[in-house]
Amino acid sequence: MILSQIEHYWTGRAEGYSQVNQHELSTGQDQVWFQEISRYLPEGKALKILDVGTGPGFFAILLARQGYDVTAVDYTEAMLEEARKNAGALAEKIHFCRMDAQHLTFPDHTFDVVISRNLTWNLEEPERAYAEWMRVLKEGGRLLNFDANWYHHLFDEEKRREYEKDRRAVEALHLDDHYTCTDIDAMEEIARQVPMSRTMRPAWDLKTLRACSGAQVWADEQVWKRVWDQEEKVNYASTPMFLVSAVKS
Image 1 (cartoon, one colour):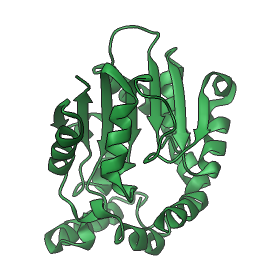
Image 2: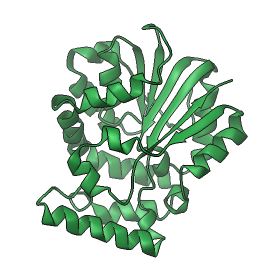
Image 3: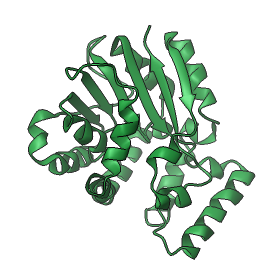
């Protein structure tokens, strides 16, 4: 089952990925991200927010800092351990749960906001995940999903050339390569098995969300320009991040 393979990979990545989140939380990137997210949050500090695929806890921490009632879920226990450590004193205020993003156990209409980053592409059943996320939203609740066409270069020759151009640019500028500093073979093996690697997005996301929920749905394909730092922009020039947003009607 690919889910166990994915869990094994991210267990090994937990500490390294946590360092990335720690950097974001300590260099002001958290405020850049919150400024973007806050544009879409409903009014009121009493919001109940679900962070799906929290990883080392970046979204959960920056939202809990603002006083929101945050629940953070991840399938990988090692990621949740890193998230608790990164949260520090805030850990007691964040509800951490080990849970499959495709099979949530929360009741219907529980949350005002469901938020996620870099998760959907990595799922075996992304359609089911979207259906679940919309199910647990309250009426009028907002879905915010930040993602990209990660590893599409494995299935598209033009994207492959662009990806290799990114690698050369990173080397020329003496930056850390965000791909080659990971277990790239293991990640590519997973990427070849999950459906989103070969699907052009966010068109797929918009169609899927409209079909499964009838929600008001739109995408922002320029969000990467506002939330990525310069190193990310060079590393991922061929794979820009987008935002898919939906309001449950």
